[in-house]
Image 1 (cartoon, rainbow, N blue to C red):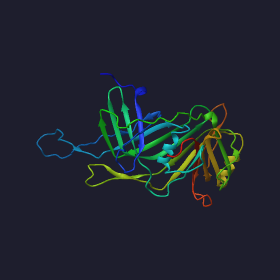
Image 2 (image 1 turned 30 degrees about the vertical axis):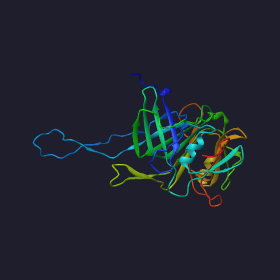
Image 3 (image 1 turned 135 degrees about the vertical axis):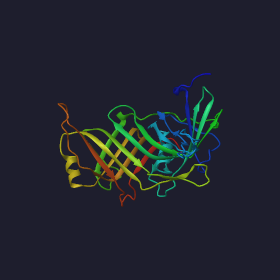
Image 4 (image 1 turned 90 degrees about the vertical axis):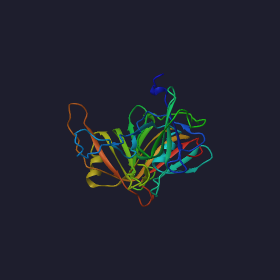
Amino acid sequence: MPRQMGARSQLLVKKESSYGVAPSGNWQKMPVRSYDVVIANDIVPDPAIGFGHRESIDPSQGPVDLKGPLVVPVDVRNIGFWLSMLLGTESVSGTGPYVHVFKPEETTNLNSFSAELGHVDTGKYFVHSGLMINKGTFNFAGSGLASLSMDAIGQSQTKATSSGGGTPTAPVYTPFSQLQGAIFEDSAGSTNPANAIANITAATLAIDNQMNAEIGVGSAGKILGGDAGQLVINGEFTLRFADTTMYDLAVAKTFISASWGWTIDSNNSLLIACPRLVLGNFTPPLSGPGGVMAKVPFHVSRDSGAATSLIATLTNDVTSY
C-alpha cells in the first residue's frame, strides 16, 4: 500500500446551492499551499463516579468540530472563487476581459462550498461540506509570491474511495508576484487612491466575518450553518521610518483611503480599496544599529459616500464565479 505524498494530493472545490449538500457535476481543481481544515477530537469524557472503581467509563460523542486554516496563492483566476466565499457574490461587467467587483455581502448568509481532499495514491477522498470562510488575510511584501490565509468552518466530513468531483476544471494558473504589487493612499472617500506610500516593506489586510456557528438540536452534533457577524477589517503597515507623515496622521486620527493590489497588465489585476480607514498610534522603536522599522496598525470602517468599507476589483478572462 503506497503512502500518500502531499505533492500528489489534490483539492477540489465547488460552490453549494444548498447549505451542507455536496454539489454534483464537475468541480474545480484548486491550487493550494496548505489545507489544514480538519475534524477535531469529538470524544467527550464522562466524569461520573460511584461505580466502585477509579477507571474512566465510556465517553460520549461530541459535536462535529470541522474547522481550520488554509492558505492559497493569489493568482489571476482562482482567487475569484475565494473572494466570492469571503465577501459574497460579485457583480460582473465587460465582455472580456471581465471586471469582477466584490463588496462585503450585506446579508449574514455568505456563500458556502464543499471541498474534496483527494489522497489519490491511497484511493482515499475526504469531502468537507458546509464550508464557509470566517476570516481571510492578505499578505503584502517586497518579494516572493502573494498569498491569502483563511480560516474555514464546516458542517460534515465523509470518506469515499473514489472522487465525486466529476471531470474537474483547472483554470490556467497565473500567480501574482509581490514584485507586481503596490500600495496607495489618498483622502478619505476615494475608491481609487493614487498616491504611492513610500518606505513600506510589508503589510497585512485582514477581513473577519466573525461568524457565529451554532449546533442544532437533533442535528447529530452538526452546526446549522455560519451567520456572519459584524465585519471587522484591519491590518498593519510595516515601514522604514524616514519621516512623520504617517505618525502625524495617526496622532490626528485623520481618516484616509488606501488600496493594495497586484497588476500584471490591464487585463489581469487584483486591486483592493478601502475608502475609509484610520491609523493607530505607534512608536518607532530602537532595536539595533540597522534601519528603524515601525509597525503601523489601521482600522477600516464603512464610508457613507462609497456605501461600503471595501471594494475588491478582479480583472481577468473568467466570465463569473
